[in-house]
Length: 202
Image (tube, rainbow, N blue to C red; front, side, top):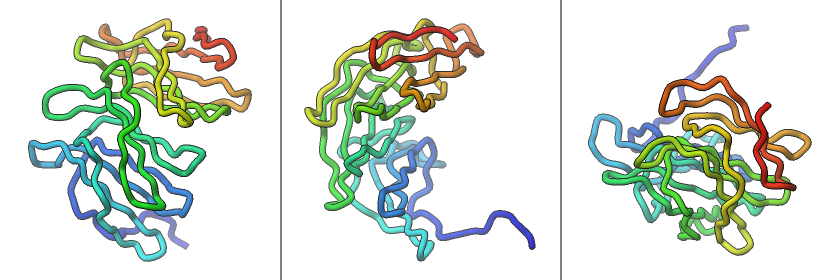
């Protein structure tokens, strides 16, 4: 028996630096990105159906963006944050509702950012951490409350970083690893405690 990759249906648009989110239905939502081979950011979205291997164009985001993040909330909606358009980094965030196929704007982050991370906490809130701003790597973090659609500041990282990873641990803390600072690559790791809002090195 040969195990490996098989081809499936192609997207309607070539794209890079986009996001892909597995919905509760099992379908996959691909959103935004940079038009591969072109010079434009995309606001377009597509749904992949694993049962047929086909793609369907759905409503596009309100803002074209690439290098953003996307996360499926406990409600089943998809939260997209930040990213870059043709001119600047974005503070905007949007929600995709799979039941209607519609994108709606929600509260803006305090900082425009790319290459950040987005983590859903055990209380349902969303932690956005670090990333790249117009002036360099960020160490600030923000919390999104889906019940109010608002953002609040929380504790800052000990080291500014972008291009890092974030993992939600079984104890409810968030582990941030690696990434890039303005001075080069990082091997450091930090833990966020939602009960205190504090980051500690590990």
